[in-house]
Length: 417
Image (cartoon, rainbow, N blue to C red):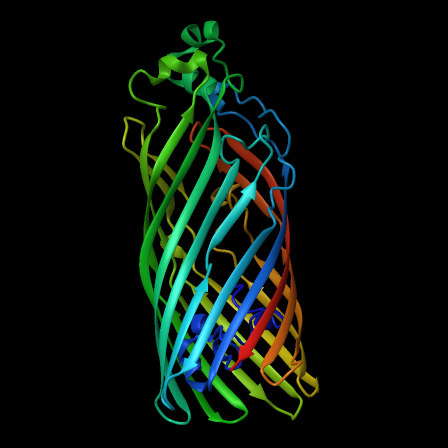
């Protein structure tokens, strides 16, 4: 959601009806039709998460004895991330408005301590996107405008985890072949690093209807984007486990992983009900049920990897209030309820220990000159507890609870000319 520091200050409750900053390129290209002249918006955000795991009985697979998983609880897996975006809007004619956006609409970044109990399922997880979004809006009437945009999206991914070669050896060769080599559960760890990237294309469309100067209704759609991430799988194998590589398994190879990023539909309402007061409301539906599993397909004899996810579609509902307490100065408050796509503990993986959350946000806009406006926003996200009860590829069970919270700080400069 971090595409406008102004909107951050009201929990993005006015996202699809905003007509006074250039983030309309992303949220609703139809709203660009209400912008006059030229406008550039530069913004940056610090996303400051905290994610801590509390063990609740993590153990090896029952056929391997079911012993407790060794190690710590992973520390704070949250990684502070800086997110920039840039938008520009230019009025070509009274009816046509051109826009351009450069942003990062999806991302994941978490990092656990190397020897933690869930190392066989996750260590480092990093997914970044860069999205270039040219767009065009047409002002059909004085009340109605329509816009469309193209999304050219680059995705870069890196995932790492440990491999329990002791458990794998016992499961395939038995204790008589493995024990003399020291290949026992949790005593012969290796490592896997997956790294790849992809470029694909989507689109977004939007409409804005303003029946009067104090009321706006907006709706927008962003298409799904199907990525096929291609890259390398690099294995680190302890010397005692090298016989397990003789059939072409656990050797460095090429890999690819299909990933569909979801389409979204949003609806918004803005209403100024007094000279200094306005309210906004927004509903966002996200098609997360496209994400059914995390699949990795190897070019070697390594068996393909499938992590079932079975995510569900979600709604995000936000409301906000704006108060103009002086000319050129506006204070905002907002609250949002944001559903998680994860259906339960058995589908919650440590790479993304997400849960339902509530946003509380506040922001301030200040116009020091006729052409420049500064925006600042802050939000705190309160997450519900996130139980984890997930089985890894070697049958190990990670059981416990993740406790999460996030702070977001955003700053933005708008320049009209």
